[in-house]
Length: 453
Ligand code: NAD
Image (cartoon, rainbow, N blue to C red; front, side, top):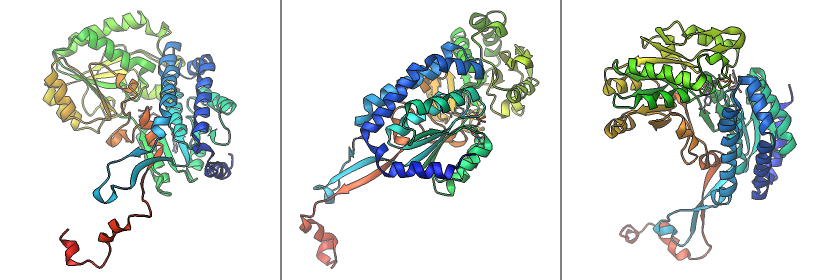
């Protein structure tokens, strides 16, 4: 293990020199990062294929183009984002300058996970650089081909003294967390988030926690079920369900269920052909541990669609489970794979009561034509984000904050929100050394006359 203390201290001294604060430095780094992603497109597709058997199209869409969009946004808007923001003044400060100055925190740590191993470290990196920080990235050891690619490639493009990749698992991350960081941005599960929060508390380091949870998908009977099947299964099966905002379970009434199952069966054939395992459009479970976790969930309720597994191939067929109970493991823990339980509720009120009896999810999906039903879910539930009549797409709108609430995390990013996440918002008031007459009123002696003003 490297001497992380030395690494962090060296980085902090470069940060203190002011190098990363310079807007020209930030732009150069962002441009270099853009070149890296553009020039290494093919290699990125290859490493993701090795880690997750991810189809090139999915890699291009969710990893390459996703971060390129963020980079273009940041490069176009950086001058604007970094500008001091003027604020409304009070009577006593009318003649002064009051503004918010965004300043970098210092040396920040980004800890990533394996399911979108490029997007989940590069997107926060963009905001961290844009805000003027020095950055250490700790990618997930589980997506090791991508992590090695990042460790090898980033130093070829970016300023090595200010941006570094440190690979490793629990021992390395534990050692890193013993160091003092000025911000920690963590993506992963809720259990580890608490370990990170404890480590951060030692130095009162602020954190963002991008976590997971069980994102429900309510299907109202007035919906076009053909469309629901397509949008729902696209969102569920992208990356074989290993997506933090994948619809985790469907909640609908008993009448919707058989019709939805019929449409889902047809959609699966349309997407992947008769044998999903032979399709090159369907990713694999990341490793044997997660494969076995998936397999154990298959014994919940009844298999209505799918159910096949192949351990040698880490393959789990897209599976829909029915007759599941709220206490079944598949309804208690985040699925994070291609298994979709359908939980029945009497009606929308019953569905909302059930959703609200659980931890707040990262995403919530509602399929309904009736605007009153849409409104009801928006008003009576809470989740990190919400998407009506589609799945996942709210995450593609960079003007929307992406993040959790309650057990699904705190803090948010994407677009300007990432810049804001990595910036301390410094409240500044600049006065002149003149007009002391105006200040006199606040000073003793506190005469009766002053009380009457
Ligand atoms: P993981 O096992 O890769 O862990 C994430 C990171 O935490 C890794 O870098 C790992 O090295 C580190 N880590 C693991 N154990 C640790 C420990 N004991 N001490 C310190 N560091 C440790 O990934 P995971 O946690 O299985 O990721 C899956 C979870 O992440 C799911 O719950 C998913 O929903 C969530 N997720 C959230 C988002 C989001 O944006 N909100 C995105 C993707 C995934």
